[in-house]
Image (cartoon, rainbow, N blue to C red; front, side, top):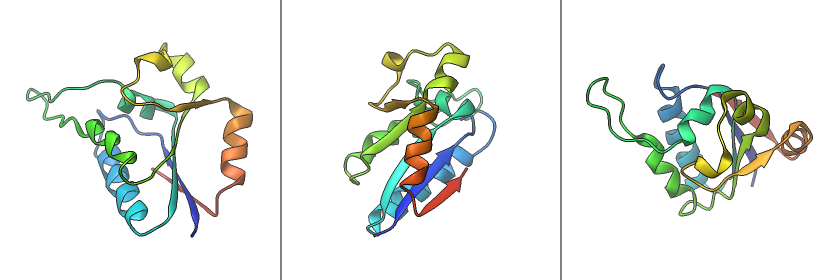
Length: 118
């Protein structure tokens, strides 16, 4: 079993990278990889509660993050600095995550066999 970290950096509003990353995460977890996810930069906006927005076709795919438990994806982390820079409180996020500082992120990276950036 390989430890794979998917590093998310994309806002849910600019393109489909967040949705594509979610699909990749679930597919890799389904084939017995040990998957970790780290939300950083504008990807932290993916963790806020959302709704479908018909006015600009944003489908609320982040609701699917609740499937992480079903797929045994236990390492779901968020960058503390990214939250702070955007004025987001971890208590406001739609799922439970582990908030990591720079040292925690370095430790997470060190435990991985592969890192995929999205």
